[in-house]
Length: 85
Image (cartoon, rainbow, N blue to C red; front, side, top):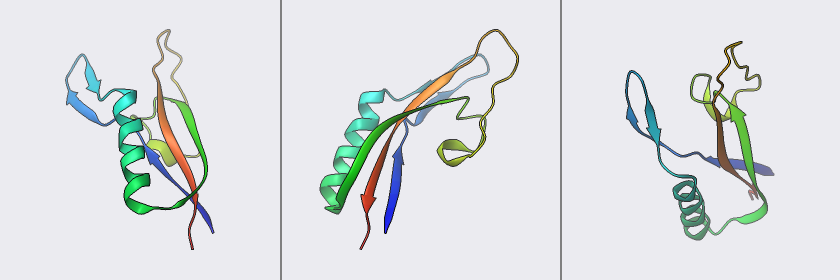
């Protein structure tokens, strides 16, 4: 069976005017550590970019929309596809 695991930069500080997240490199590091620890059979690794990922239901939401505002935020994360026995 093929399945996946997402590694998104985690929120480090939530403020009224700004929110900060880990770096993309930290998400890659987390993915690498998980792969080494679990010894799974990797099928594919991809970078996924989604709009307003944190205001929706995260990385698994099937419909993500942006508001009609001039400014829109886009987020990237690592998705590891692997074979589960």
